[in-house]
Length: 218
Image (cartoon, rainbow, N blue to C red; front, side):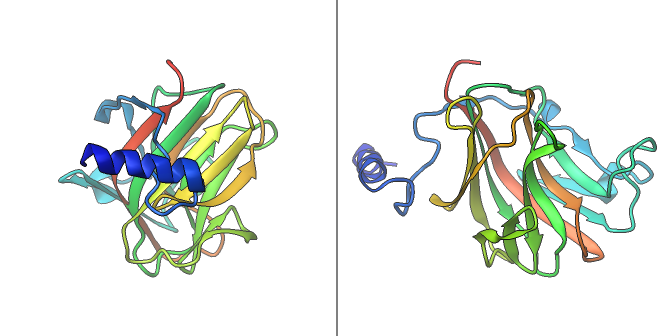
C-alpha cells in the first residue's frame, strides 16, 4: 500500500475514530508470530481429524455435527472443532485477534470465536451465529452483525485486560460492539465451531489470515 494512503488512513482513524470506514484496528499493535504448531485443533475424539478439519491454501475449514462426541472422552462439553492460540495465554495488557471468516448459510446455533477465561464463567467473550446474525452470546440486544452468511468478512477483537477492562469488536474495520470484560487471570483466543442452543445438524466456519497482536512486548 502506498505510504501516502497509509498516512491518510491513519489520519482518518485518528480524526473520525474507530468507526471510520477502512480503519485498521491493528495500527499501533505488535504482531505476535504464530506457527501451525501453536494452533492445535480440538475436534471430536472418535473420528479422524481430517473428517472435521482441513487446511487448503491457507484456508482453514472446520466443521462438526451437533450429534458428534466432545473433544475428549472425559469432557462433558458440546461438540466442537476449534483452534486455540498456544502458548499465547495472557493476563494483562492489550491483545487483539484478527481473522477473515466465512460462515455458510444454514449454520446456526454455534459459537465461532471466543475469549477463554473469566472470574465466574468459562469465557469472557463468545460470538454466536443464529440465523445469519453474529451475536454476543445469546444477547439479542448486542448484535455485532445481522447478515454474515456466505461472505468473507474481517473480524477484529481487542481485549484490554488491565486498562479499560473492555472487549471491542470490529467488522471490516468498523467498530460494532464494545462490552465490559468478565474478569479472570488467564485468557486466550479460540476460533472455529462450538455447538450452542438450537443448532443446525452441520456447523461450519472457514478462516484465513488469522493473526495475533499485542500492544506491548510479551
